[in-house]
Length: 243
Image 1 (cartoon, rainbow, N blue to C red):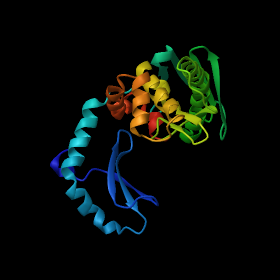
Image 2 (image 1 turned 90 degrees about the vertical axis):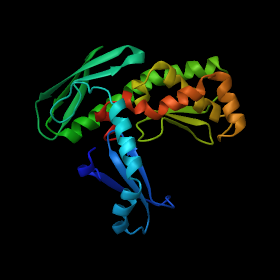
Image 3 (image 1 turned 45 degrees about the vertical axis):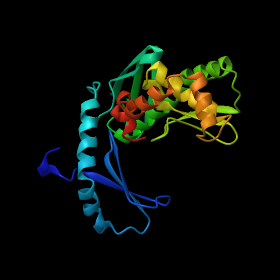
Image 4 (image 1 turned 120 degrees about the vertical axis):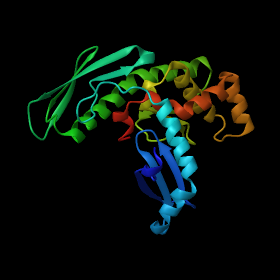
């Protein structure tokens, strides 16, 4: 980001839970200005100028960590979908056969076919997200169940869904939700998130007792927790951009 380019493009989000205006930077959505309800938007330029150093530093860090993108179509849809830990690599083919509808099919263990109105970007993404959830259910949930059993944790239910910011969550009823994006992470980070959520079935907070339990099952949790701050780099842009 050069001096002349400041401020960079940004989006504004109004949050009913926000008490103060704040900034956040994500790899695919870029700079986001989060505003409380009733905030006067004419003050946004001043807010950006006050945090110019942070914006430039964070943007530079994201650029330095960014990996080379996987091959994609002209509209950003993937030609290949890879889940490294599960040793899966799917080739994706797009065939135009109809208007207004489309379908996705697993033709073999490593081949996906999207046929129909493949020029419809939103429709293709919807199909890919649905398939991604399907694979997450088939791959993540059995691994989670095995880990819980091996560590002697009990939970009510485990689910998968595509979430924007959370890698996982645990409700007061011990229902655990895992983010589909975990499919793209290395094994040790997947396990770290799973352990974290399992420990919430005992302590639904981030107390000392909670972290002590995490440490018991993940001695390197501090290192893993820091690595999760940049774990987005493993997730393809076509997934994160619309999550």
